[in-house]
Image 1 (spheres, helix red, strand yellow):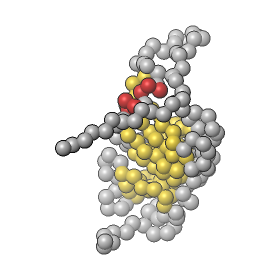
Image 2 (cartoon, helix red, strand yellow):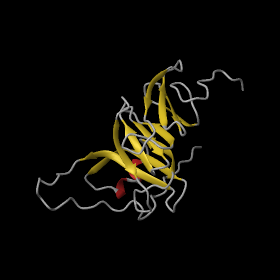
Image 3 (cartoon, one colour):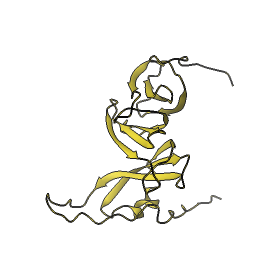
Image 4 (cartoon, one colour):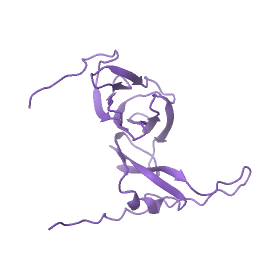
Length: 193
């Protein structure tokens, strides 16, 4: 093939990359590039201009240490797998920190050197059995870990349709079945003639 275009050069200023590790496109056509050694994700327009820089080096919420895998959902939220704190950080479309998933360990939901994030709006029916019956999964977030016994974690995002306990009510809703209890059923295959 023929090289059509090249973006950026080596460096740490906006539009430069020190160690780019992953790419993702958002629903509005922006290109997101994670840079592990610059501890940030840059958001570029179709001309390669920097629109936003998400994250900075550090250990507090919203900062990054070694970002690797990235994904962007239909609402424009950015998901960043940060290998050092064993978490996935989620940012809104303006680059503001929202929340984190995972953390170090081998318990359900924990991560161990996460490297890749994939968002899927398909196959929800195979994972719905692991969620609370009153929780409607709208999309799935798959995260791969490079180390530890649990290589792939699946998180369901959606809407809780049940009644939340009243303030001061000590009885929480019943827990959902553990996601690691059994593998999901194999999707049916179809054959065409």
